[in-house]
Image 1 (cartoon, rainbow, N blue to C red):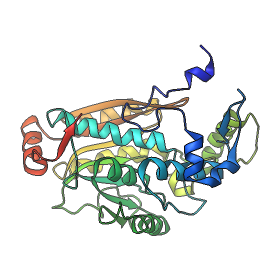
Image 2: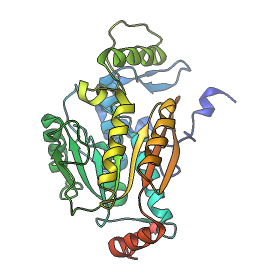
Image 3: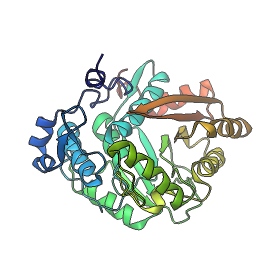
Image 4: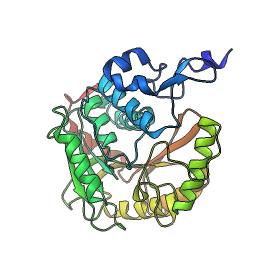
Length: 326
């Protein structure tokens, strides 16, 4: 089977993902005519987007959000991270499946469900998908005031998002839940795409590899094809330390949040994460494989609730009229 045929359907994506099929460039360029400027033949001679160009990726994402999700205004500074939409959507769909397991196989929908997005970023992408796909409400935190301002502007510029997403500034960059989630506040799940790199130099190395894979060119100081400011990509100790701090704090909020979760990019970090979760007494831990293109990742999710506590949470917060078939 040819490479072109293998790419017709992105089978690694979730079955409910709107972008499992090959991009309909004709429909997307109708939605966002600017996209025409960034389409060129790939190595198979087929029309494709120049994924090595961060501007092209952003214009494509605007078209995807408009065409599939009804989001007409998605503006944020070019230096901020521009995420790949299909992979972000997969995270949200996987979380929906986790909630369905506790709800007789039905996904709980509507504004009775509240999600906490740790590091909402200037693009506000996870809340956008969660609101438009399932009608959930979101709390989004970030350590960067400019990112919070940008996310708020996106929310206020789209009627679909208004009153569904609350953006909160995290004033202490060492904290994850403290300073954001109130002691009496309840959230149904938390999500996080943690900073991957431990230094800017490390981020540059990763970008060089990515640009070479996408364009076949070697560049000493490449532009990140999905952009991203330092705080979005880098933190002290990288992904491993960030997640361990999150795990430690989650224990303090064990009864505030039904399910905690995070993306884990490095498989080598899993053993230490599992050990940390075991030490703090997580009742159940789930690991869900994720994959887009050539990249593999996974979600690690955990809850401190017993079966009885899960039943009580479902009955008191969700009710029977807030669900759809899985």
